[in-house]
Amino acid sequence: MALLTVAWLRGGVSNEKVVVVETSLAPGAVQSNPGGKPGLLVFVQPGMLEINGRVVRATPGEVWFETAEARTVKNAGTSTVRFVQIDFLTAGSAEMWGNTGLSPNYKVLLDNQYARVYDIRIPAGTREPQHTHKNRVVVCLSGAELRHLMPDGPEEPSTLKTGEIAWRLGGTHIGQNVGKTDLWAIAVEPK
Image (cartoon, helix red, strand yellow):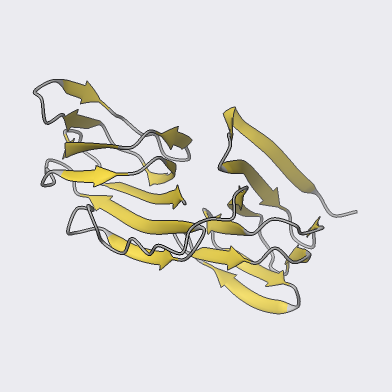
């Protein structure tokens, strides 16, 4: 029998907007979802998946939006595939946010009625201009030692570790990567 591992994240991420689960699928394993809630998969490890009969090459940092319909995800490859599943619990909003408020070097991957999803990359030893985030799930693909400079003066540590998945509150800040490694994270702001 194929193995399926579903684990709640450290501390869990479950609130009025989202439920977040990290999943590892062994080769040949199948995960069925009865549907009812739209969701998003954020791929953490590479591999080959079959989602509702469609073959998808999972690449770290790539996202896959899922409608509220029933779905089956099968690992069609030869190695374990790890992804983060984010289920949206609200009807969302017709408002599209695009790049509004974001740092200019962020790349928007998806902006629909349920979420704005963007790629964050901050090289070691650099800082971003002041920008604003909304409440969000952060999936860290490459961790770094960070510091946020707040508009009213205080500084706050904001370090992310590789593999960490966290719920972060929205706010305005200047982000600094004060470490020796580049940060790479995917942010998902539910609407």
